[in-house]
Length: 416
Image 1 (cartoon, one colour):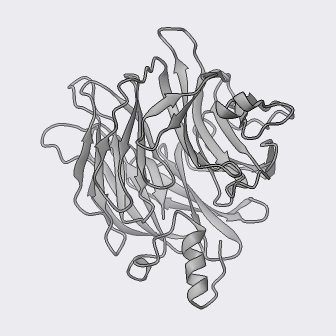
Image 2: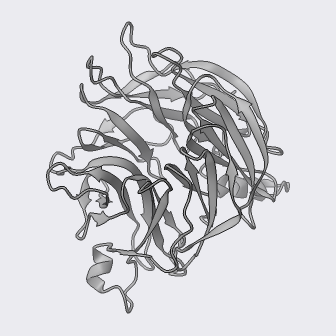
Image 3: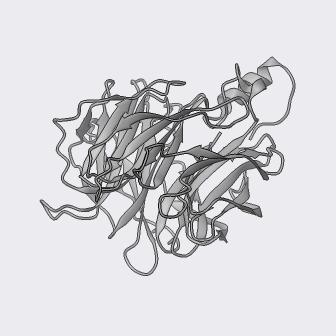
């Protein structure tokens, strides 16, 4: 994303460019880029974190190691590893294990320190969830203060942490009533013009056994201590079977030139679908002061977004919040869209999609040191490999595909 220019100011700019890169104080002793891929193996054997070094000129991958275990329990399965998140410094990582309800083996979150060569140290159990429950997904906020987890119970759990730390402290959300079974989650921070930063958590659900209000998007405000409060107007109806969600802030400087948009990927029929919502952030002809106070979401329906492929299971945005990428497990494709800065509408890239390996389930992006853009990777669970693409800064288009073998059944991934 940035050019190779000398001097202290260029180095500082490179460090500030992206949350994916390491902090400047330690970058000289660490790989310039690294990709971490969870692998699920078979029958509980082979659940590891595989580490790859990223060539920031070409995007090619080279193996660092593949023996960091995601389950150290003797004689008991932890269930498959689902998600991996890195702290903002790139020095620590957390892995969410699904658990095994039939044993019951509780879902767990393992914590790792990351060595100077990019490899993972021995894990510690940072959190143990409820025995008999099943973990679904995990994410963190941009500042590395909170880790959010959704489970089948249903539960929305929050853990406080700090950049560089492998310690998690549960946040008491016992007053929060969750009746909808969650499917995906995304966190975002928004600073209104002249105001203070607010953090929001968005959670999709596809089943409400109590109220039968299925297929929804819920909005929670995150307090400074990590407690969650569901906003007035939440939940919002989505297309049938929401599978993924991505919140995007196209106005990070708080200058009211963009907005906050939430994208939901669903599987209503044989093909996938996208819903778009815009958060009320300023008082205008559409949003009242009450709507802004309650962070009301307004559906964006004109024009309708181009449909992705089957089973849009994961989304991400590029470091500039200009392009949205959607990986589709059922059609083995990754789709790209340009985000309308002020409207949130989506325009399909040209070409609209690229093929991946079989059954991709996760994505990660790393900014390049070239001026041309970034690198996008997908983990392909059906073919046990990784697809990689160069991404253009100006057009968002994906090109120069590569395929790299991985251990059996790759799942969640993260890059720095």
